[in-house]
Image (tube, rainbow, N blue to C red):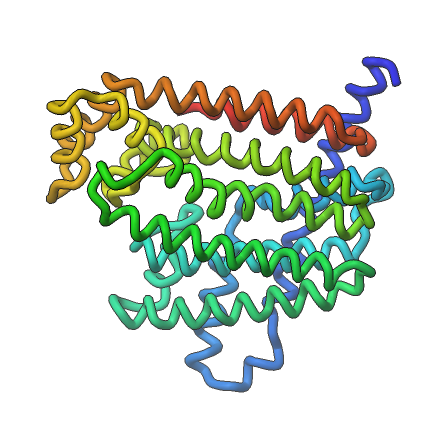
Length: 356
């Protein structure tokens, strides 16, 4: 294929994937209608109303797009559009992700999600809202698995089983993340921060949808292994870049709280990278400002300055760049997928340099 042909194929694939994101919304709306549950009780109907509103808020829908990209790389003909069964499976994957968000927001005591209140905030005050949100998340998990298995695709059971295994690993990553947030900095290693990033983001957010999509397309083991490498490296790069945004990000530009990780006491890669490079007084200052209470704007300014001074920010960006290059090299060895590979390559490059 000529360079012009490659560019044309990539633009065509990007347009088709963008169209698919738009087409996914009515599928999600239908799956959340749940007419069989409306007669149960008016209180439950109100919970379902809030749950639908939360789940249908505009979002990037990255995981469904990666799922379709994996299917395309396995030989799926994206030019003909996304088959209805694949749309159904992709919507189930988005419901699974929404379940994760609901529970994560409760665990992290987050107040907002996607420009609106976190579900537990919308469902009521204090402990009551949290308890009902956990139940609503469980409900979403059941609806997601029901949808995945009911998609009618030949390899749906295999792909669903694979996704469930990844979800188990994600839960372990979340538990480790919560445990590390209570640990003194001298008990946290760079390896542990990378393990959390791998379990919570790389495997769940990138590897799982790419590999599951390829499974749905009947991919070879070689292609599945190649996509696993792409997703693991690209996902780690994404999370470490996100760690930088979670400390140095501009709220309006990054779309997230630029001091969120400081306020939550997260043991992230930039923090531990700075800790490993700091002298004894520097380590004492990092421990004091990061673990001390209360959290203050002045404390955030000091934390940023310390991590910058001891090389945590620069070290993290170097690792992001290295992982991104590795992911793009792994991707280059895979089939083109009618331009899908070029779209993924551009996505990897863009994610590694998101504005902060």
